[in-house]
Structure formats: C-alpha cells, structure tokens
Image (cartoon, rainbow, N blue to C red; front, side, top):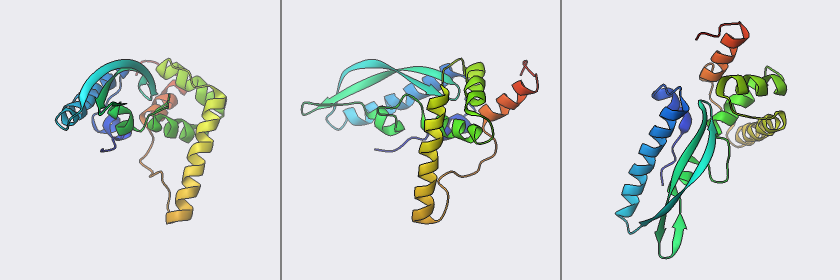
Length: 168
C-alpha cells in the first residue's frame, strides 16, 4: 500500500483549515477503499477517530474493510497514523519550533493557532522522537531525515501572532 504524506498534501494544496483537510483525507480514503474492494475486500463499517494536525484537530470517519475474516483500516496504514493521536507532520513542526522556543511557548502558540492541546510533555516526546530519527538516519545514511523546506505555515503564523498581528 502506498504511503501518503500529509505534509505534502497540506503544502501542495495549501490547506489551511481542518475541515478542508478532513474532506481531502476522506477523498483519499474513498480512492483506497474503491481500489481494495476490487481485490476481494468488502466494507465492514466505520468508526470515528480524531487526528491532531497542523491545521487543527480532524475527526475522521475511518472505513473498515474485511477479507477472509480479517478486518483492516487501510487509511491508517497509508497515512502512518495507526495508534497515533498526532500526525507526523505536526510532530515535526512542533519539534522544529521547540528547537528555538520553550516547550511551554510552543504549546501555548499551538493552542492559540489551532485551538487544540499539545502539552509540554507531549512536545518534549516529539523532540525526543524526531531527534532519535535524525540520529539514526545520520548514522545509517550520513544525512538528515528532515529536509529543510523553509519555515512551516504554523511557524509563520506563530511569528505573526508574536508580533501582534491578529488579523492574518
């Protein structure tokens, strides 16, 4: 199954709202489900699941598929979010901000911008997780897993709020 990078979707399509991101993810899920139903899978219901992303929290309706008595939720695997509350792109973004601000400042800015919670201890965990990935990747390949792509939209919005610009 193909891995889907939420960061690329958010940046390429300039998604700024959680509702638009939810629509896009559900479109992607429908494409995945249609492809799998042609391979012997059948729909087996759905459940709701919250995912916290950079545009804000998104409540997804996750479709379950079954084949040979086994049930799967292919969207979770495609997005790499099985057993994850926070998206990978959000973890990397908050770890980036926490590298230049305190965990508390990062948490406060995230709450102001998205109206979602990311406690200081959670942000600390993101920094540790991303840091270990970078160290592992550098020891294996000699380069960083995080490619510099400029400031993230979240970081730019934090800078605007810090300057007192609340109308953007």
